[in-house]
Image (cartoon, rainbow, N blue to C red; front, side):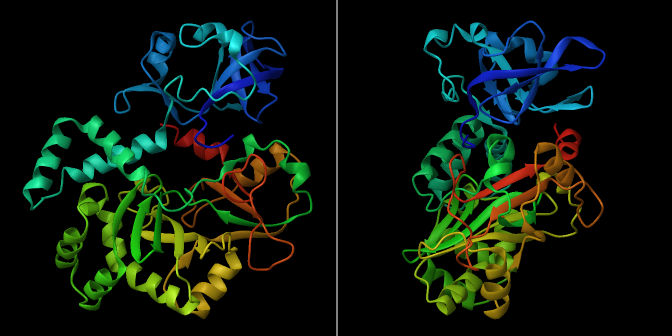
Length: 422
């Protein structure tokens, strides 16, 4: 399932007893590889159910009120669905019997795989977190024009409406595929399909997705879901040539796009200035003779995701490069040719594996992910695998059925999820 599909109809496939628990069991489904704790007598094999993925938020509807004590989070204004561990098994998400939701949908019309994300108003925790971070940054800004001051006052008065409007406004501008890998649980056939294939395994960094792009003469700075900043590249390069300190640079940038401070977190702009992203991507495009160029990466460090990697300063690591429609450049090409050979001052995410896809089942690949650590010894979020093109040393394969935008998947560490579920 796509990451935008957060709730959908599934078919109960089987049940496993939990030692010492008489009233609950572990359920599995035909449509995905997740295991979910359910009440023993609520389902039988072959039944249809509604599955809601973990790290999502359900609205405050009567049908979900039983979740209030365990799941309600005031900052989200709803019920956070997290992973949990019981009897040595990690339960991901929640399953509802069709009858439980008959007041908001018609059980007789349900079919396996049907997307119910919009019907049930399920929200992604990541999107909500980004909106909250945007609003927090907004409160620290000092707009100079009357129009901006009015916009900021309205956002302070109606923060939730402002967050929605910001998201909708920028959705039309987003120029590239969003950075999101498919979870391995949604690809149950991958162990057979990828058997013997050559893959790259890169460490999943615990931060926020940030991308930069040059397209049609403009420079874009983007989060996972929004265009944070867009301005003509030529004008930006004139500003870059002045080598201004951060405060003066921000004033110049702010004049080119009203959204520079409104929706961008200050730390993103700070790193853009410090590491000369605009100058470097422009230089890189020239040396590659590229009319359009996009770098997608993860920004980690203080002030982001509680800095779980314990970095002393902000660091942006690139994991994807797209040039003139040539997508899916692999790790070796990006690191060795695009950055080192061209003398471009960017870094890639750490590659921790290159070789044959050798894992036979979920248990084996989860054990690999669970053992991963960051440099400081803390639990790593997981690993991202990408399938290398057998006919070219420079590219990854095109996406396969069920995958988002390339032949890739992510394996999240169970231990990491349980430790940081709140």
